[in-house]
Image (cartoon, rainbow, N blue to C red):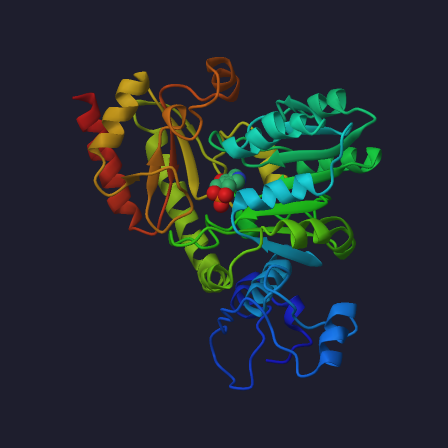
Length: 398
Ligand SMILES: *Cc1c(COP(=O)(O)O)cnc(C)c1O
């Protein structure tokens, strides 16, 4: 394989090959450089590293060869110029926001987001004198009405957790550009396969690699991707001096995860689509939200900006918390867990787990009812999952 055309390869091939560098041993698999530092042949060579004249590695808090391969592979699949890998998805979100705001700035965000992201914006930012506004981001007018002259950052997650709402990234990115703000998109639920926020005009993309990128429940990780100028001039010093970097071991695990990302996510999506259709026909179920079904409330935006459905399904049982808990407890193949994107199918009741810290009012605004469940479809045979769900629905009705 020559290196000259590797950037134009199709996604499944990029996920296997992009970013790979080999040692003189010519190993097949990506080498794991489990090292903190690097040695220099001479004092002059050390000096050249530090002046930047020689672009080699200095210290793994800054960069590491294994982590570098993961960042380059993510850049290839995302269409980004540069990336920095982080110890978790939250380290990625925190770094992407905190490296670029100062006292007096305003952050505008869609309120349907991962709970810890909400903590950063609602609780942490005001401690440093940064203002914020949270809006219902599905309605574009809310973004237009809430921008201020000091809006520096806009933040959204699409599809959202847990109700899988979808926002018009291109329009919101256009608004951000028109006022000189940076739009950050948390692209976890879409995966790098189904949505490319940078192509839609967003400035920065963040992932929790803990989810589909690992995909087998092993390591935490995250990544921030953008253009070279923003990464080197805005993020880089924050990143080097606050130390949120991904460990080389976890980066190696993520590289192996990326190799199989396309086959896993495509199989999980096929099963999820089949299961969503099955759920929609069940009497015990009041509502099914699945990006990929024609009855999704933002089906038009999905058709425009996403190239696939989802491995996630939101469903609402008739009979509230009692019915939801009875259903969860009767499942045998699907496990109760707040994680997602795993090879194992997982289900969670957001109102009492991932979103329990929200006020009743905030839950109601986000559609997080007592009967709502979030289902992450894994790699089991879809018919076994359908049998499990069918049995549990009957058991829950008693
Ligand atoms: C899980 C998740 C995060 C946080 O990622 P961690 O790796 O758990 O820190 C952020 N955003 C979304 C959408 C997530 O699903």
